Image 1: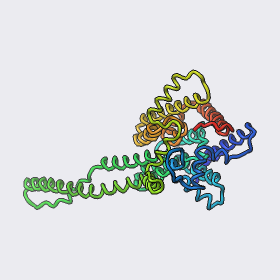
Image 2 (image 1 turned 180 degrees about the horizontal axis):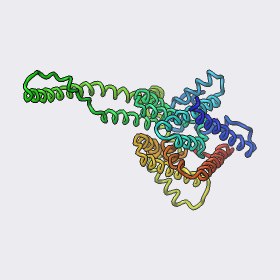
Image 3 (image 1 turned 135 degrees about the horizontal axis):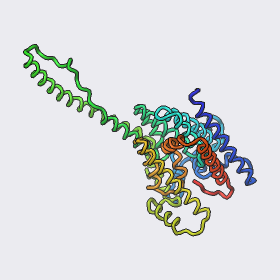
Image 4 (image 1 turned 90 degrees about the horizontal axis):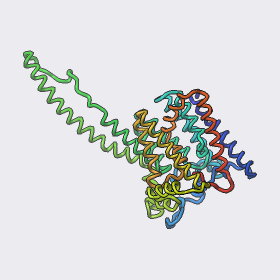
Length: 408
């Protein structure tokens, strides 16, 4: 428990700060104090609809809730039933506890494989960056972060089945969970091919008593034959066992999205209904739309809220990509692979919209930035943290604005 004190302290401080900003925003806008109105807004309303009315079963020709994956609403429903809480409050409990648990696992992960100083700043950057308020809403960020970090904890400890299990849960949480699943499988394959076959020892080779020269010749011949036979037997048995294991590991790692697709096939007739539904959200034209957004930023001459938000998403994308480069410079190949896939999927299949939120679960970039920040002078680190918290206050005020400004 002592080892978890810092992580739990950061989680508690984050909760006080974010809730304080939300309530301050309510007072600023002269709105009734309501944490639930903030936590259940935007995507939170879609998850609420899944919990209370189930998944939509009609034609996928408009925005519908089948675009949202089932693990968060399932846990929200369970907590609501057990604790007799309204849906949004149950979702807030799931998100808040998931975030606290994610910080604890992240703390242990970074302290074990990096340093305590980097671990401290990783947690501070995750908890107090300007967009960390999403960890407290009925969004998937907290739950997904917990599952992703847990999967990597088991990958780095070479516990492949546990890693695949958490990857499977991640793919049941959001589509970018495939980044976790792919990384688990790549690490499993890389570990397999990195191993060298164990050579039989000299004592396992019987040699008849003969002259020294004959003995050496016989020993050499028998050793060569035994090595060849042993190598063939090991390869045959290894592949015989390893290939089925890999197939089962892949099924477990992708089990969430496989199960959800099977359900959608039965429920709507389209196993990819979540993709079809997402196409009806604004700005989901793939790379073509990304080009259109860039042209909009280049040609637009009037700075309004739409322009500012579009620019914000691209700035966050650039910051995230710089973080990816830093991860590569640290030679953390698995973390870099996960980061690259997690950042690329939203762009390939959609847009830069909400990149500020998507980057929240790409925890390796926070580790990389923490490695840089912890080397700075103390006054500069404190100043950066203060500016980050001010940014969090501004974003929170925009999120509780009664004009329903979409930040992510």
